[in-house]
Length: 79
Image (cartoon, rainbow, N blue to C red; front, side, top):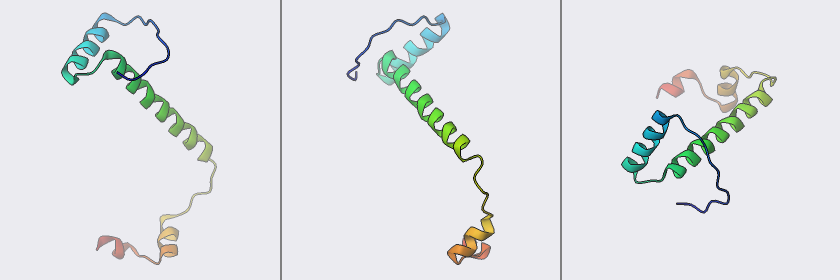
């Protein structure tokens, strides 16, 4: 188990708890590791969503313009 700095108590639905316990045994990991990994993934997703929102008003560059800038054509992509 990783070095955790805080301990907390959470109340889980019994079916969720059984699922996590089964997953932990199957994967030879602790329930805490699984929960921490899931929350870390959620934080990464939140960062991605914020970045998407920040870029929402950027100008759209047509794909053809990008190809032209790179000196490529659609046929070049097929080969």
